[in-house]
Length: 230
Image (cartoon, rainbow, N blue to C red):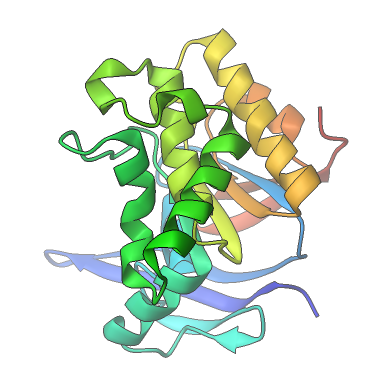
């Protein structure tokens, strides 16, 4: 059984009198340990799918099962609890809290878990080491480069040891050299730690690191390519 199973997954909402369907009858399986790049034009359903996988939004129809757990019919409160335990989310613009240090930003999601202070410290230290910025733990976001901020954001996403790691344009705000370093880091987390990664991207260069590239158009899967990661 695949880690992620989407069956006839549909999301519809209304904008005034207009009916919008960013995702329609999507069937998709993603295996544990996969590294998937989602591509497609604006409005193709990429971010909608990512938000459904994250439990940020709920489908209008269809089913979504992640690691054996149906999440399509859960309440928003139940989804929030599930998300805290199972999802790590990497944002394009980092979304770090400016008044907190790198260490404190990474520790933040752990405060939702029943862990001792020592256990939190051990997890944060391991996450900092995994992304290679242990020496920046006491720095505030304003004291970090864009690449370092993204590394903090990645460490924050993996510190809870999530089932899946979701990334929304993780290199979109970075120069090419820094973006390459971030993609190398994500590929290493996938390869060495077995993290299952689903990444939305507009940059075809970043798909070189993915194992699978999915192309969405008008809310439907139009192409799937299997590749060899960089």
